[in-house]
Length: 434
Image 1 (tube, rainbow, N blue to C red):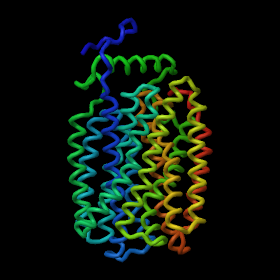
Image 2 (cartoon, one colour):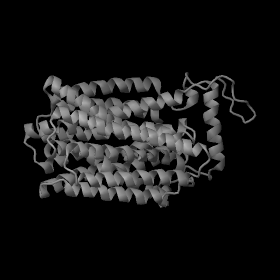
Image 3 (tube, rainbow, N blue to C red):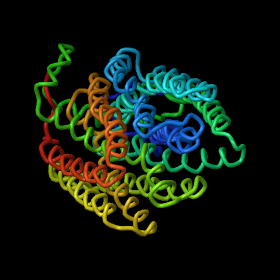
Image 4 (cartoon, one colour):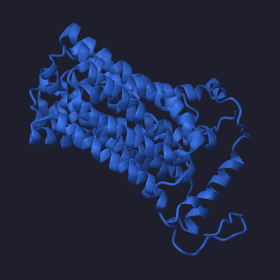
C-alpha cells in the first residue's frame, strides 16, 4: 500500500475498505464484555448478600470498590495510551481484568471480594482512554460521534447482556462463582483477539486499502489546518479551559444516573417490585438494551447533522439537552408510579435518551490534539468514575437510613439537570491550544 498522502493525489477508484468500523465494532464488543463483568456483581448481589449476610451500607462499599482503582488509574492509563499506543494497552488491560473477574469466584468473605474488585477496576481503567485515542486516530471528524457511541454503546449493551448471561449462568449452575469463572475466561480470550486485530494507525493494518487510508489522512490534514498550534508542553494546561471542566463534570453527572442504575437497579427491582433473579435478567436486558439502541441512534443523528454542515454547538447542545431533559423526567417519574410495568418502561426511557450522551466520547478529539486524546479521554472518564465511587455509597446510605429508594431517585433526577447545565456550557467549535 502506497504511503502517498499529498493533496494532488487522486483518491483510488476502488471502494474504501471499512477496517476502522470493524475496529470500533470490536471495541463495542470489548466494552460490552467490560460491562458484563461489572454487571455480574450487581446481578449476583442478592445471593452474595445472603451468603455473607451483608447490610445495605456494606453492599454500597462492595459495589463502589471497583470504581476506587478504576478512577485512580484513569490519568495514568490515558498517559500510558498516549506513550505506548492503544493496541498493547487494550490487550493487556482486557487479559488482566478477565483474570481478576475469574479470581473473584474464590472469595470466601466480602473483604476478599472487595480486593478482587479493586484489581478489576485497575485493570479495566485504560480501556476507555485507549478507545478515545483510537477514535482520534482512525475516525474523521464526521465519523467520531458514531465512533464514540460504538465505543460507549458497549456500556448499556454489556449491562443488558450481562444481566441475561450472568443470570442464566447462575440459574444453570446454581452458583455465582461458576458464572464469574466463565465470564473471566471468555474475557481473556477476547483480549488475545484484540491484540491480533487492532493496530495503532490505518497504515499499520494489512486490511486497510489506499482509499480508506487517504480518506482518514486527508480528513485529519484538513482538521489540523484549521486547528491552533499545539505543543508537547504541560498537559495540565487543558485544565484552564471551562469546556474541559464541563466535559468532565458532565460525564460525572451522566454516570451518577447510569452507574446508579447499573449498581442498584437489580436490588431495587428485587426488593421493591418483587422481581426474582430470572425475571431480573430479562427486565434488566430490556432496560439496558433500550440504552444501547438509543446510544447508536444518537450517534447516527449527530454525525448526519454535522455532515450536513450544521454548527457543532447547535448539534451537540440540542441533542444533549433533549437527552438530559427526557431522562430527568423519566427517572423522576419512577418515584411516583407503583406498577412494575410502568417502572420498567420509565427506566428504559431514562436510558434510551440518557445514552445519547455517549457522544461525549467524541469530545477529547474535538477539544484537543490527537497526540493528547488519551489524556483528555482519561480526564473525561475520571469524572465519570468519581461518580461510580460516590453514587454506590450514597445510595447505600440513603437506603439504610431511610428504608426507601425515593431520595435516591430524586438524587438521580437532580444529576440529570446538572448534566444539562454542563452540556450547554461546552464550546464544541473550538480546538483548545496548549
